[in-house]
Amino acid sequence: QVQLKESGPGLVQPSQTLSLTCTVSGFSLTSNSVSWVRQPPGKGLEWMGAIWSGGSTDYNSALKSRLSISRDTSKSQVFLKMNSLQTEDTAIYFCTRSSGQLYYVMDAWGQGASVTVSS
Amino acid sequence: IQLTQSPSLLSASVGDRVTLSCKGSQNINNYLAWYQQKLGEAPKLLIYNTNSLQTGIPSRFSGSGSGTDYTLTISSLQPEDVATYFCYQYNNGFTFGSGTKLEIK
Image 1 (cartoon, each protein chain N blue to C red):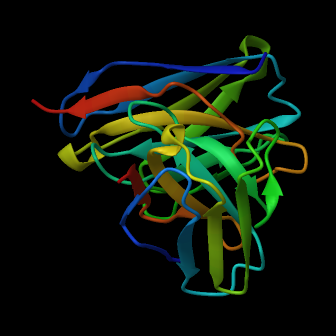
Image 2 (cartoon, chains in turn yellow, purple):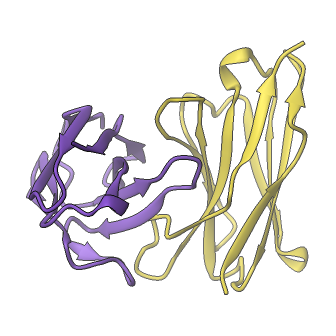
């Protein structure tokens, strides 16, 4: 059974760094890709970036200077780090899976981690 | 590529045929998917590659389109279809539309 679960702090202070972990089960990170997608309260979805099955990464150009995605395949975990957080980064952060012929399409999502940026 | 969805809000009756639109700022080359997001839940993949139905999705959902213009159709609206629907393109970068909120009249 494919599962993804996000974890991390619910509250981050402005200008600080957000660190989130996505722990996956039911599939391998070496043959599947993981993307991060976020959703501000009451708003739409934004693709943030991905770590592909081969280990390379791609980032949304609007976030590239602040964002880093990495993984530990032995622990089945993917990590998101984003620095210089501002209030507009308040959102639900989802980790997602893409696999097989759906290489760029997210077919499984975590429940989401709510992050509030506030002092 | 920017995606424009219309309408932003759609109210329809149970049993109606419903059509949601997604228009790209450039050619999407059929690399378009549709997601359904119910209140408080993560999005769920419905359609990929314009018209391929994801496993387990009811056949009342279908997709069509080409070039810059794409459509999600629900052939007979059910109460459980109340949700916000997002289109997503993966032809050039990765972007989502702003969503269409579907409610029952």
